[in-house]
Length: 138
Image 1 (cartoon, helix red, strand yellow):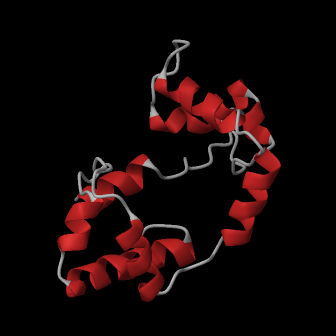
Image 2 (cartoon, helix red, strand yellow):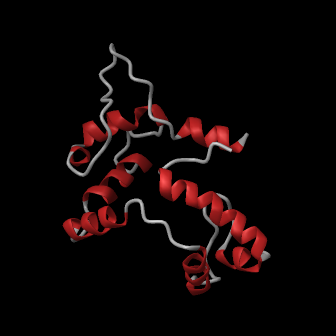
């Protein structure tokens, strides 16, 4: 049920020939314009009328990246990269246990305490995301 919710919430809109909503994917160049970005995100129904709205703040964060060219090159180089389970475990060990949980509420400390079988299961789910850039089908 939760997976269905997030799949629907973050899905790209179905192209509507009568709509003015762009159907091309966002990229560094076309997010530089607030109205273009706003139209692309309209299907999420995120409030955007106020200057301090979440969507406007998110857009500002995306468009004011220091050393943007360096960040873009680094992310492009990493696109499709999938760490091994050993690399995943090593990275997990380096994470601070004093962080707040993300949307799931699960902290790094909690994940570190899981049995290895659970960490392997979580890793396998993330492999699908890293390699296919989307949610697992099962």
